[in-house]
Amino acid sequence: MRLSIRHTTRYVFSEPVVHALQRLRLTPKETQGQQIASWDMRYQNARPELEYDDQHFNHVTLVAVEEGAREVVIECEGRVDTHDNAGVIGRHSGHLPLWSFLAQTPLTRPGPRAIDMLRDLRAEEGAKLDFLHALSERIRERVAYTTGQTGVDTTAEQAVQLGHGVCQDHAQIFIGAARMHDIPARYVSGYLMMNDRIDQEATHAWAEAHVEGLGWVGFDISNGISPDTRYVRVATGRDYRDAAPITGITFGTNTQELHVDVAVEQQQNEQQ
Image (cartoon, rainbow, N blue to C red; front, side):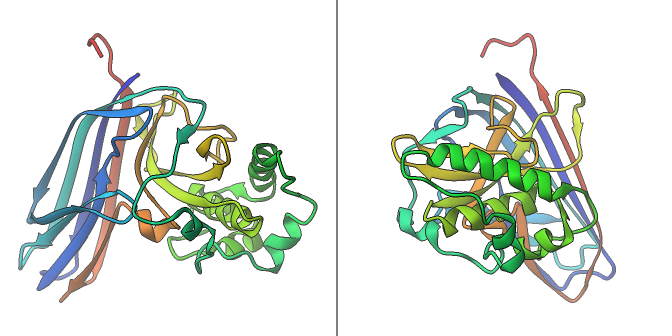
């Protein structure tokens, strides 16, 4: 399937910017089951300074905000070809060894409530894929998908305590639980084309776990499925902070407003 993506992020600052740098992870990965047909990024009141691939093979662009800017707009647009591999990405790659995805981070570390929620689930040898599907279903049952209850700094344990969260929270609860059972797991940020709309609510997030014999396998906990042709992988990491679409520092002002528009649709009438 060929997906057409438009992603616009607009910052409005309360005062003119003195100095600001933004780290962008907005370029999709070239990976198994996914190829980039085209991808362009445009900037208003900002300029690219440096591009590199980080330790997770995420393509990173550093941009500097122009001094005195009151508004910054980052526009991404492109086409990505996707294939359905039943969520299987395959062998491990990247600069970090596989065992580094066993270590908990402050965002993924299970606390008493998360451990209690998962107490009766066991990762039996030879049946880890079954365990991971059961884990995904348990999280979806116990932590309702609700917007506005959590934020980017919410930990997995806090989301379990609330009983509410979004895709980011579901992914981090899953990652923490998988690592607790000695299964390497990582966070994925990207895009999902919902079948009933073109304009999406936001970017999407899910998790991947490493299963012997298969390699990395994706789990979209919020939707209860493994990623298919409607998904585009952009960045991966140990948790949200490693794969966040945009992070940065700003001096001389505070962000007053943030607007994000995401549109994903199947491209028709074009040879793939």
